[in-house]
Length: 559
Image 1: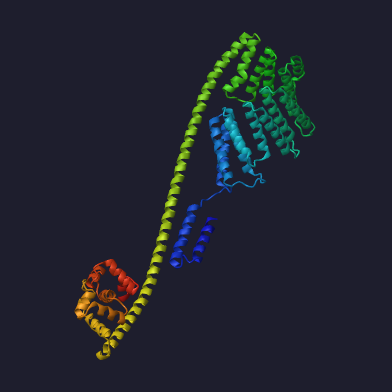
Image 2: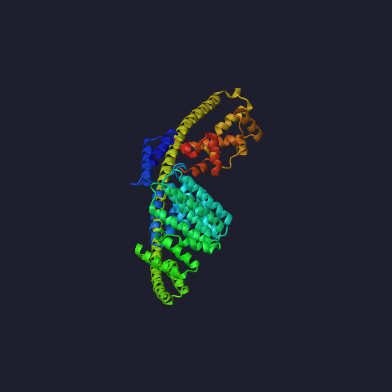
């Protein structure tokens, strides 16, 4: 594309007659080819560079996020989002109705970056970021998640009306997204309702929580009607619904009904880590501490069985500490002391892991920054070198063009001066012939003024008269033996000029002769013809011959 543009510019220059000679055209073609070569870079991926870089940063962030390296995850989510945001602002994104990978990446990278801000307590920063994302044409599936996170941030800031509006909008957007009837539609709606319910429960908004629990039950009923629904998921979410109904009853002061609902839940529906956690928390809140401690012990076993979970402070807070408190409240002192010892070991392990993880993260961040700085410095140098090369090339082209313009103008000026010189010679030849004709007339036929003018012309045949810098009308009148009045009358009648102009005419003609026949400097020629001021000489010469003394010399010598 750049080659086509440069070639088009070349054609424009040719058409506008800025470049007329073949050698200059060849020079311009070479320059344009060099510029095109400097700006091209081979690519194997057809995607734009900004999208490839953003995708790479996004995947790196996901990897670090999965490894609990939150600093690195946040840094790369931010880089991916900011690159995509700039590309969107620069108009590089596809149209809004083209729901391509770019839009998914933009929405999801921004959402995950906002989650990172929310996790480390920067709620206002998360809300500002989410508002900025929502102002663009992201897909409904990402918009729903962003609105849901926005509601959580607003609840944390006790902006309850805004939170209700955000959650309602998130539910509506997700409903619209799942109108195609796919299997994941009702399931995702359940998950959305469950998350919103938990948010309102956490902040004590029990009426709102009850409404979202009802919506969750409705979506579960829709899911159960499908022939392709998973029985395991049905059992799991039936357990969640019942557990959270008991939780809501207990929170609103209906302890007897809450215990009845919990006791009616089959054990087969409490089998996931999340379900076991809810059960342990509920039992502790209900004062059934022994059962709660047993449930936390089961949770610890479940974690160990499903994965090799790294011991972190989150795991200590979620599993060991509540189990310790439950054992203590249940009067199980020995079990509590054993859990306390495990907690001490776990804390040491978590501290060691945290230190290693922090050191590894900071090392990667430092190395990443160093690489980015080195890459930026390399790009800056390349840009500077390219600018210098292009500038030098343009300067070379401009110099060549100026030289060509000067040469052309000099040629045209020389031709004009040559024509003018020939006209001057013809004019002076005619004036000489006219003087000779007047000299040939009998004296008795001439008037007094004509006789004075003839004597004056004869006098001026001696260069010593007019080359004297002191020569003026008084000098001429004295040499002719007359007065200046008669001299003025004679010059006005016979040549329509003044004594000063008459003297200067002879001086300029004498200067022209010296310029044509000698190589004396112009300043010396001016002095030899009786004019001591060089600028006055140049002005008088140009007025008389319409060219400078130097130009006249070149024309006279055929240069």
